[in-house]
Length: 202
Image (cartoon, rainbow, N blue to C red; front, top):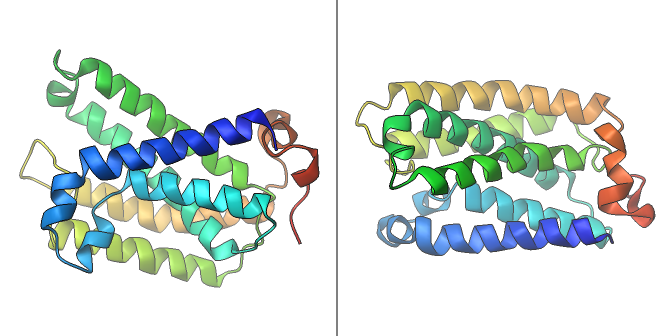
C-alpha cells in the first residue's frame, strides 16, 4: 500500500479516537443504550472509513458497510461545515476560530475521502433502503432522543431539516455515484490504493 493510504488511515483513526474521548466523551457517558450509538458523528464515520480501507487492503468484501461509510462521510461533512458557518458568531469567535478552521478542513477531507471508494464496491438497490433506514434512525435519535451534537441554539428545525434532506438525497446520490462512476478523478486511484488494488476486489 502507498504512504498516502497509511497516512489517511492513521489520520482517520487518530481523529476518531480524539472525537470519542474528548469531544463526545461527556455525552457518551450520559446517553443510554441504544441511543448512545448515534451520539458520535464524525468519529464514527472516520473510524468506519479506516476500517473499510483496511478491509479492502485485506481483500475482505463488505460492500454494504463501504456504502454506509461513504454516505456517512459526505453527510456528516456537509452538515458539520454548514453548522460551523451558519453559527459563525459562536464557532468563529476569536476563542474558537482556529480550531473551527481545522474542523472545516477535516470535514472537507471527509467529503473527499468518500470518493476513494469509487470502483471499490458493487452497489445494490437495497443499499438505498439500508442507508435510508440507518441514517433515518440516526436523525430520529439526534432530534427526538436528544443525541445531536451540542449546538449554540435551542431551535433545531433548520438542523433537523438539513439532516433529513441529506439522508434522503445522499442515499440515492451515493448509489448513483458508486454505481455509475468507474474512476476516481485526477488519477487518484493508483496513488492512494497502489497498483495491487488498482482494480475492484473480487
